[in-house]
Image (cartoon, rainbow, N blue to C red; front, side, top):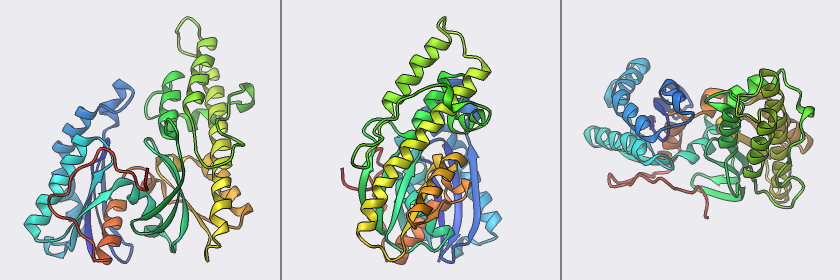
Length: 343
């Protein structure tokens, strides 16, 4: 089975072709970083316009890269939510048009399900497994019981961890996107110099909170540069290191609670999957891998290219659903909000 996947939920425009043997035959991504950097974050209207301008050419590139005729495509998978509604509509409408023209099934994919199943594209990951989904818009712990079957153990009660990375990076003058910038700055920083709160650490359950941490960093930056000037490079590195250390502590603590709940069910092959853009952070990955090893879990982290938004994971989710005989009507809606598990 060969599936064409389309991803336009935020500020990456992507097209990919994946088959049921886990081969990524094409994977093309257009980054919009330069378009949004002047604003310090994603501007929905700019993102949607960019999707319109480049998606057709990306699809053509993917077909050329895969060296396949259109008749070889067995299905079209397009992200239908959650995300920026105007951008979602660009990809979903394009997917519908292709499915109708080719007379092939359409699968409207939940973007979070793309992340949740991405580990199965790169490794043998039998159900059930524990998933830590950490990205710019989401921070959740779930048990993945099967395709379309997700049980949430915890979520953020305010902000996502990736959003916190972006906001802190902006506060200390590192620019956008914040995740890679903070990771680079933290390499030369002294994490012990500043004491920051560790929200929710030590509490029962698996929920997260990052709003108070962002506020603490804002007050710290004000103390370091009270006149509104940018903090020094040394201060920025130390703040970045302290912030990253707090996030590592919090993620480890919350995930440890989830592991305890997961292991009660005695899964036959206990596995922790870490997915989403923040999973590309090497420091966080190392802490989580150590945690998994201590509890006897295998840990799977997709390669960085499959952690950030991409169409290969969307195509693979389409493969998974089509294999089970699932498809969606051409009336399938785009959804700005679409929880992976019940609210």
